[in-house]
Image: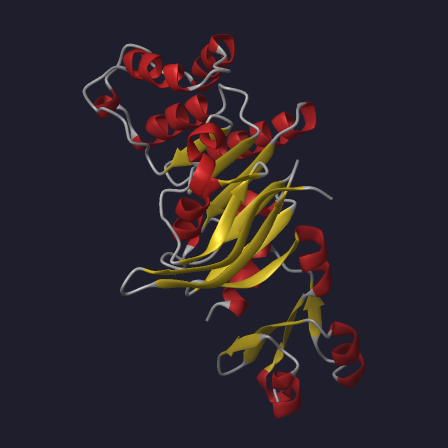
Length: 282
């Protein structure tokens, strides 16, 4: 399996926050979701990957090249969606697009106009007049209109309603099926990734807690539920973590088979990505 981006032994001190020995390999041709609570380090990892932050130690390679040495050439092959984008707010969408397209040798005007029509974007409206959702759609349209080999999105769906978020994830899945295309997608809205992500990376406090194929990750875990009367020290030792009230408890385990035999009164359910995050990050 071929990787399209690598972070090796990355450390970055930002004063009140730091990345700690981050090692990642992003697999080519898949959607990789980077999840974690706000402030966990997702954006710092993304900016380090893109060369926007220089690590104190470690190395970054993208598309087989060293980001520190070849950032300009590499970025021509990357589509970037960071928050609401760094746009000149007083320009219209068409004016801003005409500036951005000059930076990409593979700009596809027909593809861009297709996204404008698909998303219902007002070409002659000023960027400062756009709603948060429309601005997010504009940002995404630009990122997908120059045949990038890698698209990096940091919280791209935070301004979108549930229907628009689903449309975005379907669009990314369709593009991956139709062409050589890789997506890195950071989000705290884990439901965005339940259907479409191939790999999941869980970040907390600047560290990588989990990095596995999504289906493998979900298959390895089970949500376990039961009456609090069954919650003894042995059971707690076999859970990642748990929460409880006066009547019942709920936890996450990687040892469901053993617990089913030892505690026949428990209920086991397959987790969603949200369950993985909420029990590993507490």
